[in-house]
Structure formats: structure tokens, C-alpha cells
Image 1 (spheres, rainbow, N blue to C red):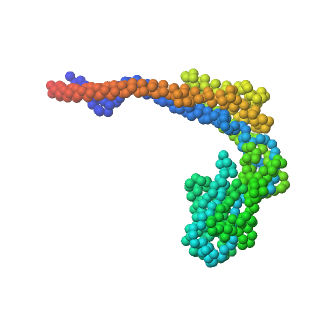
Image 2: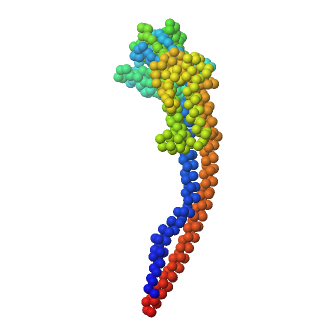
Length: 498
């Protein structure tokens, strides 16, 4: 019998054993693959919902901005000055459109007082042998009392008067500045209301004390109460006359009222004369701030017009966010016409209808507007293409609507019942709020993923045990085949010797 059966090659190599095991297990792992695929799809859907939440939140934010109850961005105004070398002007939304005439007769200045001139090396203050206490009264207006004033006490100790004139003046200035700082710390006044003291030297070897109010205007003028020994009187810093030559006094005529004080600005606006403490004036005309740079008697003009560029920027930001949202929804709730690939949210009717709802709110008529000729977006130069994407296609028409009456444009977005931005804001809130539609959808997805992960863990545990079982069986089979191979070899040798 010469038959020779070689079955050892079937299972004798470890690589063959592993390949055989992997082939079998690949069939067993199909349930695991299906579970992983389902989890992956749910993860993708959850991510798409997160991205959708961001898009909708951004669109809602733009809608809220357009419906801001405090700032009506559609009422934005721009003010222009006929001569910016003389004055500049800014307009708030509350300002009125039109032209206004302006002349400026006087600029506001800070109250400035100086002492007489002292020779630095002389000692004119040695007669003061006791502490000298005086007070400076400063303006500190409040809402209740715009004419409120505060007296700040200043003490110069006796030892400071033994030095030469220059050093005594520096000590007096230091005492005044220290007292003012203490008044700010104690909240008697604020920092803008302080009087600042300094020593100035117009000519080498001569000095004089200078006091200057931090703010301009008659409100912040200085008044003095002298020390018992008349220190301020000797300094002449409190003289109620204009400084002249070496003599002390005020540098700018303080006057006796807001009208006659040269500390105040004086200007004529639309034929009426005004007096103010500052050169920046925001309370003469509602919503308008003027900054005077020079005086001028020739009538200049303030022109206030709609700020079409700012309004356009606000509307374009809304349109951009709207288009991005619409585009994102198209990609994720529809079937691609070219590839026939279904969007991640295509099977969810809630999100399929969302795109149509948003388009409808934006493109349909807005009832209740002030002017029915402006009840659609296309009435103000905003058009949509076949997909519903918006653009300002006619900027001239948009600008004309604003210039005719900004309310016409505003109503389309801000009408309290039917405005586009008002409706979008309320509608989108149901999707993006903490307990909204998207949050609920993601919560359901998370619950489903947790269930599938538990099942996947069970399947993976089974597969692990199954692999171990098969591994053991194959190893036993390999061992049996090895014994059988040995027996076969023995049998073959026996037959050859017959």
C-alpha cells in the first residue's frame, strides 16, 4: 500500500490558524458592525444638531439686535459739520433729521488763578509763625443740586514758612494737592472736581503759585476763605481782578453768572443763545453732541441725515446669518438632487419643515406696517432667489425707503406683532432654548446611543468569549492533528518495511 496522505499542511502553521479564526469571527461580528454604524450615524446627527443650534442661535441673535427695545438701529443718524476745523458733531438715533445753524462766540475754559511773583531766594513768609488754614470751594454738582459746592480745607504748617520763597510756594502747592486728594478719597468730591496747584516760573529766579480747576466752566469756579493771618491775601491768589504784570488774580474773567462768565462756552444754535461749562455739548439738541474747536461768527451748518451705511450693515448681517441657516438646512434636511444622498435630518419632519417656516416668515407680507407700500422686503430693495436666499439687490431703493421714513423699514422687522425679526426671534427660541426642540432631540439621541453602547458592550463581550472558545478548539484540533500526523508517519514507515 503506497498511498501517502499529508494532512499536516492543513493546520500546521499558526498563520493559517489565525486566518481561519479571523475569517470565522468576521461573520460573527456583523451585529457589532451594525451597532457601531448606528452609533456613528447618531453621533453625526447629534453634531449636525449642534451646528444647527449654532446657526439658529446666531440668526436669533441678529433678530434680537434688530428688535432691541432700547436701540432702534433703523433710526441710526449721521451728523456732518460744515467746517470740521471749527466744530465736530455726532448724532444719536434719537436726533431729528434736518439742518441746524450754529455760531460759537466763546470757548469754555478752566478757572485759573495765580499769585503775585516772588523772588526765589527771598524769604517773604517768615512772619507766619503758626499753622495757616484756608479753604477752597469747588463745584460738585449732583442730580439733586446742580449748583452744589464743597469746601476743601488746606493747612500749611508753621515750619514750612521758614524756607525761601520758592520752597514755601512748593509747600503750599503740595498742601493744596494733598487736601484735594484726601477730599476725593473721602468721597467729598470726585477726581474731575479737584483744584490742581503748581509752581510756575515765567522768568528764571522768580516763581508764582498757580491754581487751576480740573474742569472748565463757571460751575467749577474757585472761591476762597482765607486763613486767619491772610495768607491767600498776601499771595494775592484770591484777588477778584484779572492778573496783571507781577500782580496776582484770575487769568480768565470769572464773572458772576453763567451768562457773563468767560469760563463758559457761548454759542448760538438755531437762533437761540446757550451757555455751557464745556466745549463738548450734548444737552442743547436731543441726540446731538457738538465739540467746539474754535470760535466763529460766520454761521455754520449741522446736517443730520439717516445713516444708511450703518443700517445697511445691520440688515446685511441679518441677511448673511439667514442665508447661512437656510443653506445649512438645505444640505441636511433635503435629498441631494445630483447624488440622491439623503441629508442627516431628512427623515425628521420637525427639521424638514423648519426651512420652509423660516422662508415663509421672511418672504411673506408683514401686516400692520405704517405704510402698506412697504409690507414686503422687496419693497425696500431686498430680493430673494429661487432658493430663498436674500440680498440687497437695489441699494438705491433701500436708501430711498430709509430717507423717506426709517419707520417704513423698521416696521418690516420690528412691528411688535408681525415684524420679521420679531416672529423669527420668538419662533427660533423654541428650538435653541435650554429645554427647546434641539435640546430634546439631542437628549433622545443620547439615550439611544447609551442603549446601543450597552448592547455593543454585550456583543463585544460575547465576541471576546467566542474568540477564546474557538481559539481553544482550534488549538486542541491542532494538537490532535499533530498526533495524527505522527501516527501516519509511523504507519508509512511500517508499510515501507513490509
